[in-house]
Length: 166
Image 1: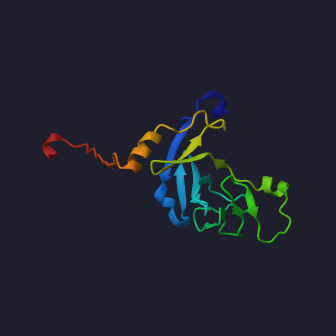
Image 2 (image 1 turned 30 degrees about the vertical axis):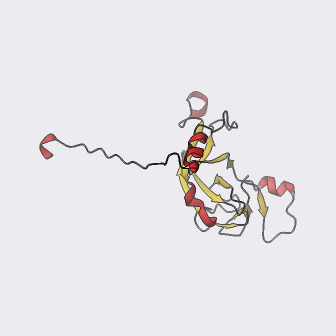
Image 3 (image 1 turned 90 degrees about the vertical axis):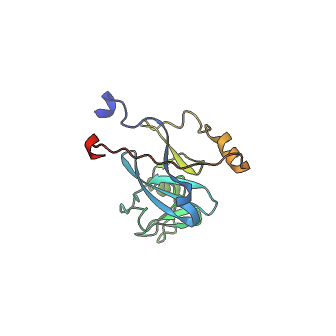
């Protein structure tokens, strides 16, 4: 009912969900964003992927105990393995992993881009593919690589207090 009459709670756009450094050396990152639980991982091929966090088999959270094996993320419960597109690539106790089984065991995967040291995913409430590519910072990334400029981290804190407390 809500989807029918109200706009989505989050804008349909690219969202930064974690730092690229969080996925170094086969790391798995549990993420709570956009009203859902996600898991990010980097396969042996170096590509980052973001999936829904729960295994379709028994509901295990892949961000807690999941391991990267090659280019797949292995479930900590029974060892099912999923690639970056969310397709089940391995079930340890079966030899007949048909296309029908793979399709039934698929996890939702998000379109993922790595830019400026961040992992971005495309979120669309209606499930549409990306409406534009994430290219706003490509020239900046090239400038950082050349050494023409460098990124700076800045923090700002706001404190609400009475002037007599200063």
